[in-house]
Structure formats: C-alpha cells, structure tokens
Image 1 (cartoon, rainbow, N blue to C red):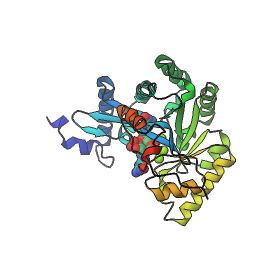
Image 2: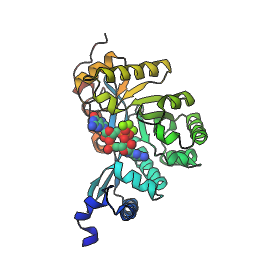
Image 3: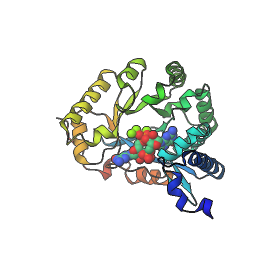
Image 4: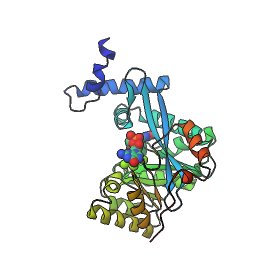
Length: 288
Ligand code: C2E
Ligand code: MG
Ligand code: MG
Ligand code: MG
C-alpha cells in the first residue's frame, strides 16, 4: 500500500514540496511504467481554416492514463520524461502512435506533433523521426512539428540543421506558443518557420483587452508579411472567432470548434460533417 496509495498522487506531482528529488525519481518510474505497459495515447484537436471553417489537420496531444493514478497531464509527464532521460523514447513512441492513427485520415489532412526542447538537442533527431515515418508508411509532407522558442535557443545551430533536414523532405515547422518564449522576434528572424501559432494567452483576451487585440493584430500582420500563416490557439467562443476572422487570421483551434478527441472520435467528427466540421458550425463570418 503506502507507496501506491492515492495520497501520493498529490505529493508526487507537487513541485513545491520538500521531496522534490524523490518526486522526480517517482515521476521517472511512472513514465518508464507507462512506456512499458502502453498507458500512453494521443488525442487529436482539429485545426480549422477560419474563413471556411474546414478541418485542415489535427494536433496530437499526448495523454497518460495510469491504472492507479488516473489521468496525468502532459504538462507533468513531459517534464518528468525530460528530467529522467526518457524523452527520446517517449517522443518516438508518441510519434509512432500518432502517425499510425493519422494514416487512417483523409490524405489532405496533416498531423501536427509537439517536440520537446530536449528532442531538438538530439543530434540524430531528423533520422529518428523519419525512420518512424518510414516504418509506419506516413508521408513526411503530411507532418508538421511544433517547437517552442525556448527549445530553439538552447542550441541555435543544431536547431537550424534539424529544421533544414526535416524541411528538405517536406516536414513543416511551426513555432508554438508564439510570444510567450524567449526573444520571439529574434527567433523568427533567425529561422524560417512555416506556421506561427499565436499563444492562447493572447487569444483569450482579444475581445476584452484593447492591448491584446493590438498585439494579436500585429502578430497576424507579421505572419502575413513573412508568409508564415498564423494559427490562433485556444479559440473558445464565437466573438473570438469573429474577431480573428476579421483580423485576417488564417487558422485556429480551440474548444469552440472541438476539444482534443480520441482516434476513434476523429473518424466520427469527419464522418458527421463531410466538409470538415463546417456543417456542425454556424455559417462563416463575412470578412469586413
Ligand atoms: P500546446 O502544444 O500549446 O497545446 C495546446 C494545449 O491547449 C493543449 O493542452 C490543449 O488541450 C489546450 N487547448 C486547446 N484548445 C483550448 C481552448 O480552447 N481552451 C483551453 N483552455 N485550452 C485549450 P494539453 O493537451 O494539456 O497539452 C499541454 C501541453 O503539453 C502542450 O501545449 C504541449 O506543450 C505539451 N504536449 C502535449 N502533447 C505533447 C507531446 O506529444 N509531446 C510533447 N513534447 N509535448 C506535448
Ligand atoms: Mg502545440
Ligand atoms: Mg501551443
Ligand atoms: Mg500554448
């Protein structure tokens, strides 16, 4: 009992505890256990073209369901895997799951996959990812990888080398959580990204805060100027959608359209509304 009792769940993941090191090794054990026993899955959140409200792809979002501890969020187990040297194996496992699921989707839909900061520091990253795609039979041109600013700055030359190798075979690179990391503008001037994901933090207050509105408008303007379509994260209501549409934002995702759903539910979501999720949504907002 004790060690696996429900009480530990709280302490186990409390980063402010005195038992930080103990927690860390427990977290590592848990990731190890999840990898060995297949407790990992990925859910998929649709990415929608805002003008037509059609699904263009899905972002894979990792989930860990533990039989004793229950659902453990990726914001907990990804750092645990990073700290315990298991992130490589975790990323590879998740990518294989996601590509296998995505194989069953209509061919025009892409898969967007989050990379960890440590993945970018792996000298063999492109080879490792491409080997998984080849094994599954998933076309590199249907894959987009999401990286954060914070991840890139750890080793800029290596990141550039990886992006070049991946883009050479058709993989697209998106900068995730744009605006929240380190020196956002420096990063987009150093690299060519294919997409820019505007962080939810900015999107959520776009209708209430004039300042947020101005910032998001500038980001969209920047994305147009640099030929790097913007994806707004965390669209939760029609007012935000309307605002973003009028500001000329190309793509978006968020609870307004759909939460992340299981692989099985992806099929249902696409089947119920053959033209993406358009049928399930209000008519598109006219551009002003
Ligand atoms: P992210 O890549 O920025 O993913 C967006 C997060 O926002 C997801 O949380 C998603 O479920 C949530 N979200 C989407 N729409 C809305 C909305 O309208 N409102 C609100 N409040 N939230 C929304 P999730 O799934 O908990 O993932 C959190 C983070 O964990 C991700 O942030 C990403 O950094 C990381 N992550 C998830 N899956 C993976 C993975 O397979 N590999 C790696 N390395 N990181 C992952
Ligand atoms: Mg992401
Ligand atoms: Mg994001
Ligand atoms: Mg975010």
